[in-house]
Every structure is written in C-alpha cells, then in structure tokens.
Image 1: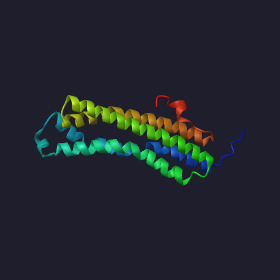
Image 2: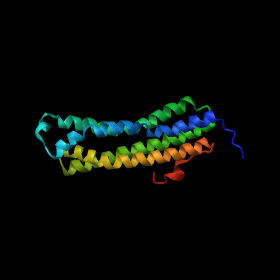
Image 3: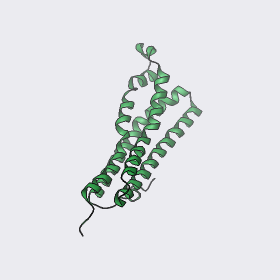
Length: 171
C-alpha cells in the first residue's frame, strides 16, 4: 500500500520526536561543571577552600531538575505551530505527553532522593548525593530516550503512526 503522507509532513513529525533529546546537551554541560566541586566535597584539597561549594551544588541541582522540562516545551511549541495537519497533530500529542511524563518522573525521582537524603544527612551531603546519583541515572535516561526517538523517527518517516505506549510500557 502506498503512503500518501507528504515527506515534508513526515519530517515535521520526525522533528517532534527528535526534540525529546533537547535537554541532553545542557545536562552534559551542567554535569561536567561541578566535577571539581564534587571532588572537593569528598576529599578537600588545598584549593577547595576558595570554591563556594554550596551555591554551586544548589545551582547545578536546580538546573538538572528543570532541564528535562525543555523537551516538552520545544515539542509543544512545534506542535502548536504545525497542528493543522492530522499526522503532525497525532505525533505531536504523542511525543508531548511522553516527554512530559519523563520530565515528571525525573522530577519525582530527584525530589524523593532529596527528601530521603535530607532525612538521613545534611543539606550539602544531600545535594552531593543527588549529583552522584545523576551521574549514573541521567545517562541511562538519555540513551533510552535517544533510542526511542530514533525508533519513532524511523516509523514516522515511513509514514506510520508511532505510539510510545507500544515501546515504553513502564511509564
């Protein structure tokens, strides 16, 4: 059966799925920024007294809580600009809700770790723990989102509808 969806419409829909990874470059930048600070938190060295540890930890953690919400924002903007086509509308809706769920799950994960670690330890140690946990969790989330986006883009470019619930039944 021949697909009648124009290639320009398929590319617009693929862009909606590709926007799922917009937060990853920002996260990499903010994860590389505090590595020296993180080293000072665990093993204070000679130059560590000059580093304002707490403000950097707070800024980095707040930024990492907000960054996953960039993807749904970009998707929403593209979706609203191109929603007159039913094919783009369906892909935009599917991509937006999936990305919003991921962002909410990451936010809830951070909040739970913060509350638990504050219950057990100090504020500074809690923020440091969040950064260490993020060093392992965020790359896993990023790779899984990238793989899912590539599958979605491939399906979209073929002119078929993609449903995240078929591939990601956990969320």
